[in-house]
Image (cartoon, rainbow, N blue to C red):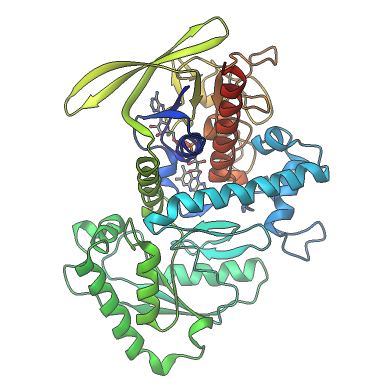
Length: 469
Ligand SMILES: Cc1cc2nc3c(=O)[nH]c(=O)nc-3n(C[C@H](O)[C@H](O)[C@H](O)COP(=O)(O)OP(=O)(O)OC[C@H]3O[C@@H](n4cnc5c(N)ncnc54)[C@H](O)[C@@H]3O)c2cc1C
């Protein structure tokens, strides 16, 4: 049987890897980078966010920080249209919670296995949250995070040294440290001692307008990493007299500059040079190398596991009755384009939303790009054909239909028509294309991508088994 996955973000890549592990023939078609490539370094399964409509940070009496497991349960209980409720049930019953917890553990372990050969690990879990800082000094309670920021848990750190790098754009150590202090005060937690520590990098090392991504590319070379190691070791010697905390309770916080591969090994060497824990900050707009790092590690895994990847754009799906049977794609080869047709017994749309290209606005209304599938906002209202501006709420804290819209699916992740029945027997959807959540508010973005990608792959596998002679 042949499966086609449309989309090369986390949802599509996870599905393709899972299908390959079930020894199914799978082709992944990707038109390029989507939201996954822009992500900031955490794998949010059920993370609180500062907005009033986000998942809660504390319990109902506001005395205790909720564990990620409790927040996942709260998501299932209170958000009946969230994709987690579609996957695990939304009754709030213990069975839904334990199914969700088991699925999260197993999904994180699978992803970790696929990324580890590229030196990227999935760290964390549902038992306790880590408190991570982003490059603006905002505090993020995180359940899972990738190597780099994951090592930067501020809990348990008595002293945090914020590295200042002269000339580096999008990273200003002093405001970061001030914002971090204010964040700790705002949530009422004791804060570590915060100190800004200039890293003396040689002139010209931070070049090309000071872009963190360019600096990250430099630390991918042994020479560039050597320069960074020398600066960190030099600082460690010079700063010895200021230190109060021992190595484990001290944390050196770097901007996200540790390159696009082998981050785990780089951190180990930096830790030795600094004599303390070392981590990167989480990214923040406009960009972060963390997302590109994740996409590269996924691409390496796809290649290792034998998934055929085609760089091109699916332009149309062919259908017969209630089945989709082939995709037609336009492939880029240098400056020229060729067309190809791929037959498939099951097709997954993991095309994302506006950033990925799965949803777009045309002729004054929002539409699903490939089949004009019905779209629903987070309140369950059908919205395809409506102008994007009509889906923007009046208050930034209130619900934003534009950012929670997507297809509605059954529990097998098959897109539903307006009558509530699956439109096709063998068409599936995963990731941001599935509506009912706003990843900026609920902070469940990559968690949904991973869990729906894996579930869709399992359902595609089941379909094949049922249909095999
Ligand atoms: C700036 C930013 C930062 C974020 N940071 C985080 C974070 O730190 N942690 C977190 O958990 N979540 C984060 N999120 C949310 C998270 O990134 C998304 O929820 C997640 O990446 C969605 O993955 P996806 O695979 O569904 O879609 P995408 O990553 O958008 O992938 C869609 C894919 O489909 C392809 N595609 C679309 N149409 C076609 C077509 N016709 N033919 C072929 N290919 C096609 C695209 O080229 C792309 O490869 C962030 C989001 C943004 C915007």
